[in-house]
Image (tube, rainbow, N blue to C red; front, top):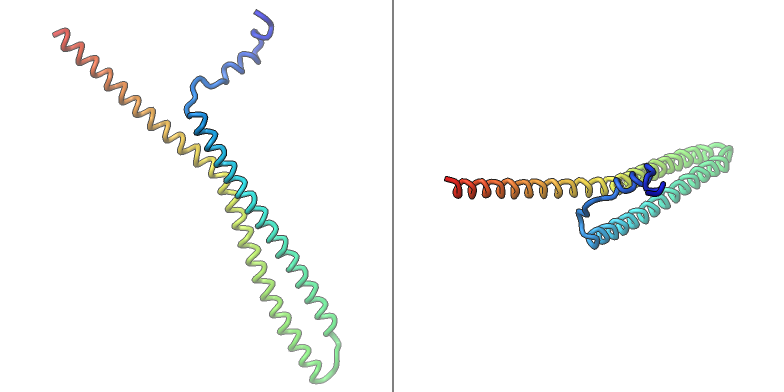
Length: 164
């Protein structure tokens, strides 16, 4: 025997090899391809949502700058009625911009929630598939156990008939 065959690394490799394949290779390949396609579509949608969130953030920043510019240009203009109308204009403009800001922030929150849901869905998909596989294998074990017990019972009945 060579030193390689005696090493513990060699023994671990041989012990970790599966002894039986539970599924057909073509089935596994098809499932793998389907999972890759699903993963790719989720990544594409994830990228789209991130891009949309970035766009909304830029839009919020632009609106903030617009509010600041509007306030600086309208401050201190005129006296009397024009000053009063400028204050009303500023107030309505500020309220409209605040409402738009709230709506945009709500939309951004909803998009972030949707993004998180897709990320969680991608992780749970593999877990769900493994659970289904375990259930199928458990049912198969129970079926084989029933067949084995029936075969044992038949042998016992044949033995009783032969030896009265």
